[in-house]
Length: 107
Image (tube, rainbow, N blue to C red):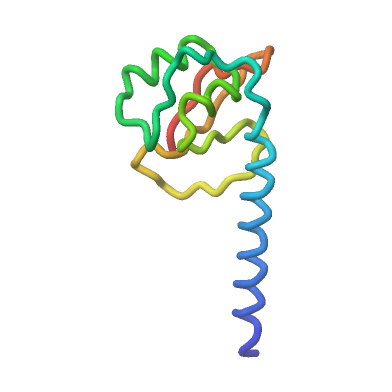
């Protein structure tokens, strides 16, 4: 009976690791389309007006990752936890028919 909580924790840990691994695979794409004239913004998003202008330009996921390398981009269909983050470090994107980011929200 005492091993049951440990097994549940192990299963939960494995699911989290698998989710992160799948998320990394879905988020990493070749950076062929990225505009090299735009500077990378390290860290979390603090300038929301600039971020909203960037999203309004409907960037590709690769362009997003090039511009905001420290923000975790969650694409539709990606398995992710729903813990609350108030530091703008994870963006749940909505994609248009061409696969470009058309909106989304921080969570």
